[in-house]
Image 1 (cartoon, rainbow, N blue to C red):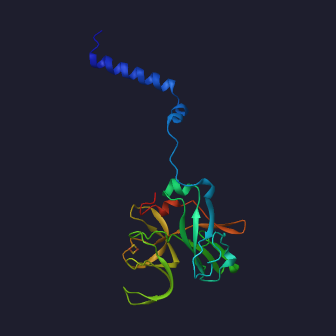
Image 2: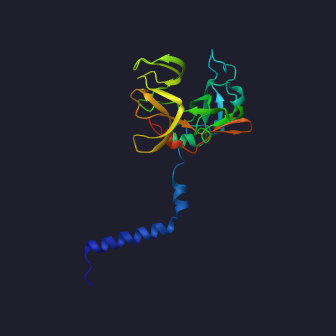
Image 3: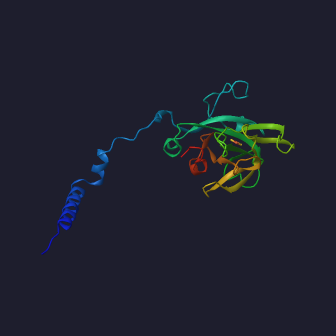
Length: 224
Ligand code: FES
C-alpha cells in the first residue's frame, strides 16, 4: 500500500488525539482549568432591594434595609441596591442601583411589579443604573420643563446628559439596538435609542426582591 508521508502524519495525529481524548475525560479536563476569576464576595450577594441611604432623602436612615411596598406612598421614589449572585456572571457587576417608584397601576404592570393599595398602585423598579443612550444615570423628576420641547412634565425620568425623557407610567415592549425585545419605560423625547428598561420585581418574606429572569434587558453600555 502506498502511504504518503502526509497521510501517515494525519493518521498519527488522529490516533494521538483519540488517545488523549480517551485518557482525559471532560471532568478531568475541567479540573485542569484554573478556577474562574471572581471579584464579588459571595457572602454579600443579595436578591433583595436594599435602601441606599442618601442624605436628604426620606430613606436616608434606612441604609441597607430591605425595601417594603408599605414604606412607600404614591410617587415616593428611592434608590436601592441589588446584587444577586448571577449579576457578576451576566453583567460583570457585583451590585447595581435601581430606582424604585410606587406608581399608579396601569395595564401590564402587574406582571412586572408588586401591586399595593388594593391594586391601585404598583411598585416598579427601573434600570437607572445606565441610560440606553450613552450610559449616564437618569434621575426621577417630580416636575420640570423640557429643554427640548418646552413642555411641562410631571413624574418622569430625565437623563441629565442629553435630556432623554422617559415615562414610568407607560411600559411597552421595545426593541433594542441588537434587535432584542425589552420591556421599558417609554422614551418621550431625546436621543436615547429606546426606553428605560424595567427590572421585574416580586415580594418575598414581606420585602421586595429583584428577579433575574430578564437580565438580557440590561445588557448594554458594557454590561454583559
Ligand atoms: S446618556 Fe442619556 S440621553 Fe444621552
